[in-house]
Image (cartoon, rainbow, N blue to C red; front, top):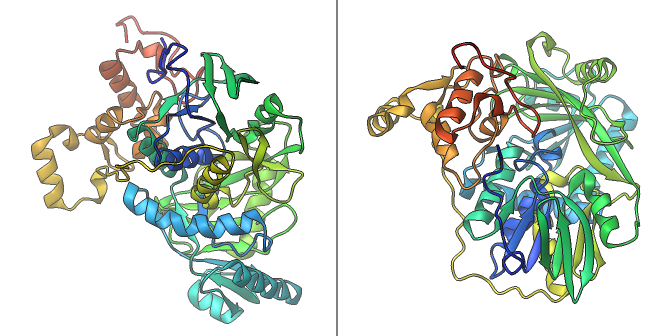
Length: 490
């Protein structure tokens, strides 16, 4: 069965777009979101069966304030701008977001001097409200900090977010405003013909005068289809612990250690869903290798305890790893690499923070290359979903009265109802897997990690989509949940 019900069978005329976006992680989604504000025919080509399947779904979920990137860099400019945009976008599109503030802690006098340098850099970058705290002042704000902390840089504009919901909201908004999303559509070749890019995929050929390369760890491969390589891709893996909600108040702020050449280091942070997240390490890998390792997780655990000694790692409910797309360049690579071909490559941290600003910048580059940017008369920028567990008792009673499916709790850990799941089935980008439902409504995110709700969600796929039970996916193509049926046919 074709799990990609959104793929469109188009003739050559319909396959012609004003601009094609390759990849629908948060950067591709942000570019499509921004492009959909204009009177353009936008196509989005995503090789996975859903949006946000790469780096976007496995990262630290931080909207960084912007004190870390080198002043004058694209990272610095787009981080600060993206952070400013994120709060407004999340409010309009109903994405979980909380401005909890961050601290970078120092354990030596040399590191205290590093904090002062970060303060100066952040001020130059335009970050508001930065302060250098003494160790005592830091512990007044965060009593769980190690007594060895000698100082901290406090950044009140740092925030936490649900990254996959952010990506989905941006992509859904682009689709609502007329963009075409083609899932399970992998780009295999490109050529420039008569001022048009011919983009060959496993689903056919697409044409456009302009292309945005937002392919994440695959960005170099896509780049080399359009132009000679100018950089070296260096995928880097980071491993994490996700702890139970009982540890979710261990810290209120996001706690960083002083950054190194490998990145921002191991952090400890609450999540917008009420858990505690700890990680990542940093390890170069050959490709998109998201395996967890004993050595990597041991490093994360011991390093995090240096900042917050009281973390109870026996409350871990999940480990995961993400791969980010670093390169041999110290900055984001966002430029016109060939006529009408815009690279968005090397988007490592703070890429999530910078995403909406990267979308804006990509459109600026396209306009400079000749693309017309006539604003639409009507751009829809609103989105709302029901989160049953956040409603008052009166609101719950009212919605159940209108739709009894909201009275059937499917995910006990997170109190997610059948009504919420059925509503996401009707969304602009419906899920095609158990984890696709998870990313939309939060099922399977609690202590049992889907052990209770998974079977019922599988049944809903069978009932509502007409799937055979053996076609129900856990996540990506090839991750079938069931291999056969019982004698009763189930």
